[in-house]
Image (cartoon, rainbow, N blue to C red; front, side, top):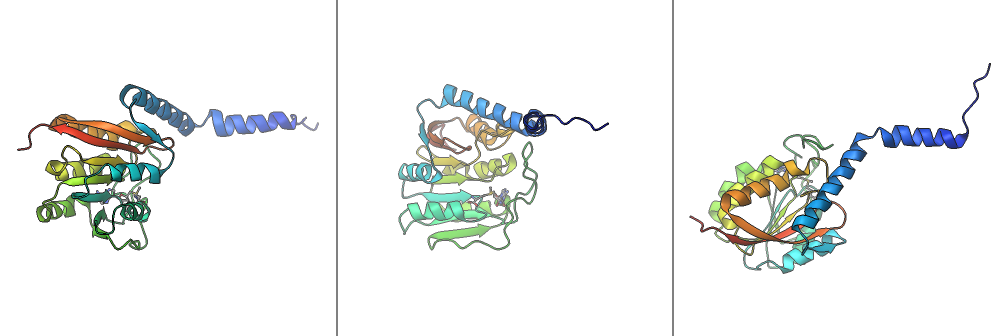
Amino acid sequence: MKKKQRPWGERFFRRFFYKYYSQNLLYELQVRARNEAVDYIQENMSDAMIWETQIDIMRHGISSSDINGLFLEFGVATGKSINLISSLVSKNVEVFGFDTFQGLPQNWSGHLAGKGQFAQKKIPKTNKNVTLIVGLFEDVLPKFILNNDKDASFIHIDCDLYASTKTILDNLDKKIKPGTVILFDEYFNYPSWKKHEFKAWQEFCLNKKITYRYLGYTSVGGTVLLQVEKRSVIK
Ligand SMILES: C[S@@+](CC[C@H](N)C(=O)[O-])C[C@H]1O[C@@H](n2cnc3c(N)ncnc32)[C@H](O)[C@@H]1O
């Protein structure tokens, strides 16, 4: 006997609900991560501005930065964000971009992106006031710091991983002073956010006795802007 088909509405509901919604762990993890980010905002960022777009938050970060210090980006990949930053500063300000262009050096734990994600076929074209420094942060930063005596004015951290963020902060260390502006691209609002850029920054501030003020965040995604207020005397 021919099996009676369920009405199309029920079939559609079952297919959609069971297959794409009720069993989807990533969806639930993301919703929880968003709620955690909102809790964090309400507890710690109530004075921060909410920006709708990347360019708006970058413009605000750059206009809050001391023009005389270093403008740095960690995680250049396609060149999209460094071209934006370098178009927002005046033409005589050099913006330094750091990347291997070989993608993430390790898996982004608790995330979909694995080792090698964001690898580029070739080094991207960038604006004239951009200087690219190719290599692992841990290999290229010590020499860069020896050759540049300015403090950090604006730092864009878009390298996603805890280890890479820690390497940046540990190397820049004394260049991060009251007034330094930092824009994190993946600070929160994804399943493992408490284990990566966020964690490295929290640990660094605790170790170096740094206090900072949140300036803003974007309404979608995990971009967060902050400015260092005080740090204990630098030895
Ligand atoms: C999300 S992508 C950056 C996206 C970029 N801002 C853009 O506009 O296209 C992250 C980048 O960080 C780089 N990266 C992560 N850890 C690194 C490390 N330790 N040394 C060098 N590059 C690293 C990867 O190669 C990758 O290109």
